[in-house]
Image (cartoon, rainbow, N blue to C red; front, side, top):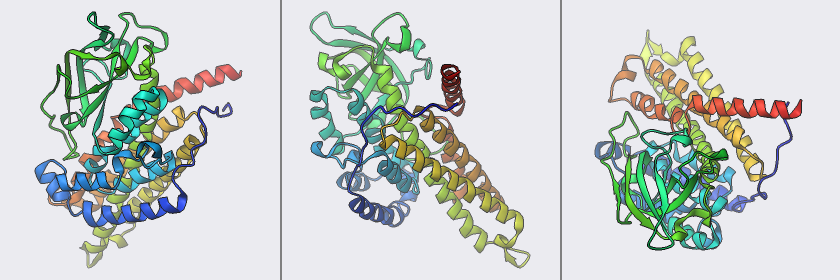
Length: 400
């Protein structure tokens, strides 16, 4: 039933392997020794300290996937996912602040930008300008036919005028630039050709940002609405210089975004399990550590098994991406499994902690709240299940 994988891009060797391994080792120490200890401050202030954001810029985290010739690190997908996985051991806000740059905005530039757009924006995001990705709207998420944001030709020039509202946009409150999806045709066209993508600096007149939404978890990571009121952008703001390609660019970028979410969920599950292991060995009941009790051991073992499975999926899908294969289905499958797995792991962790797991003074309840969003953003589990099934059925019919 499975057709041979099709090649859609040249293989990506990424950074020199020895250099990358040294970087990964240094990053792991930075996460454990700098970021994890700073989590109480991030939670209390609901923001990442400026000093840490600047350190992340200096480390090149905002330009991980930007080609070296434009000032980035030039990581391939395998290396990028490992960095996300390492970073995700700490509070999710740390990954969130740079992940849109490298997972979605840079991907959109790679897949669709003109050479002039790459020359302008790659260096900016590599140096630490913060990007956001404007797809979801109050009345549409995965339903692109219902997209209400419009882009019409500017009668006074060769540019465009954008109007509409984007909803739940990560990093919007402090972003420097947004990639905005807007309809350039009133009619819903086949293959979503009514959607185009525009690079919009956030200081453009007519762009405003709503108050950050209060969320269940992930303190320090911010989402809000973006309002576009007669926003005039030049003609070269149209990604790729061609209308009707926005949805294609968005979906290709979402492959990267879904791998990022899967890698993050896997890394955060590891953090939660490590916490449960420590607690189970320190907490005593009936005169011995609860780690000695078989049903506690079962929850720990089940969690380790599932994390290992997710890590294996991550290695496979990223290797496929680096070989240039079409990874749409595999990226969706990894994101679904890893996010659902993380939810199961953090639930077990609360159970291992027992009553203490329900108290705010322990990490378990924070892990539980933080992990819930992984099953929702970059495509809910249910939307991705439909997408996977649709491609399975299409592939079967083509091969009958």
